[in-house]
Length: 103
Image (cartoon, rainbow, N blue to C red):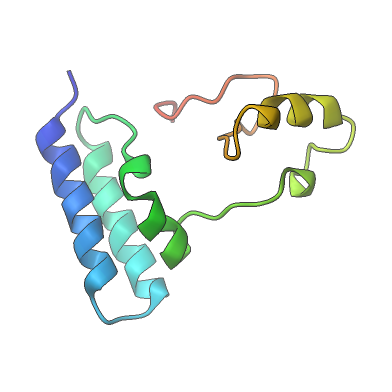
């Protein structure tokens, strides 16, 4: 069972980082530190809880699927994958399913 206390602490910490008056570069560093703490414990993938903050600061970025380095030659794969959703996490090796807990 994941440690919800740590997950909640990280979530609230990231929301607090969002409110401070500093550069996005500093916010990215602080968010990274919070996730480094979370990685030391049995925690689930919690990024979706704070995705607006992660996108706003630049900690997480989105790209159009046509910009993915493996798009050329795999167009059907990407089109099929994204017809169901507007956002999808894709493993570095597109032949493998994305696993947020894999390190």
